[in-house]
Length: 294
Image 1: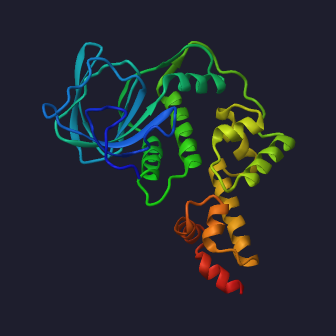
Image 2: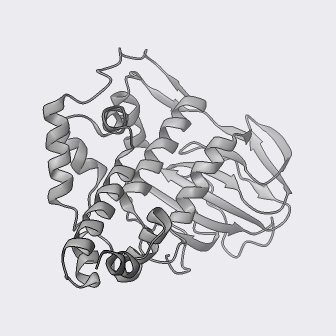
Image 3: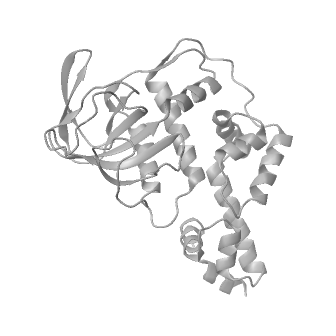
């Protein structure tokens, strides 16, 4: 979990937790926005440089904003959201202090994602306020919680969630100057899938990113997740975790290698990380598994 510091999305917010700059094309945070008139730092006169998705995560309160020259006011409840396109200044004013979950998406990356998904032409993200979208709110909450858990975050899982959130934003809040291209094949060819699986097993002890896997498969990142899931029945982050747990299980029951070393070799941060993950997914600790096989 990142320590309390400065928000990378909106510097005037009270920052609680988040990803920092580690995701590259996206930033995720949990912040508090103070009520109108209480900001120690003035809001900028222009809109954000990124597309910003905001999900209300606290107690209900009212939000006022300006759109198309008109003043608006709505009551926001937990889970309701808004999408603020890059460069669009709506000057939001909350009537009470409010806890928010935010995801900032780089416009250039989102444009590339849309193009790779067959949505050709000019991408325009339209302002959307007072959205009730439980699926979107759930994905954002899971992404935020990934950076608030005890222990290291799962970068592959976080990247997968960011991509899913971005694809959902494209679906509910964007216009395009062109049409959607025909869909590519529904699964990875066996030879490409074999290369990806080999790469995963060869790199279980280190970080594995979606970009790396898509490069090995020879497809775009946006297509890779769908093709891999169709080929294996699992999204990439779940598949990698299953392989790490299986590799650790096998080492525990067939060798006397120290558990801490097994954790490191299988891509876990430390022995505690392996223990928590194995207990959660297999219902047994490494020590208990080794003892039962003795």
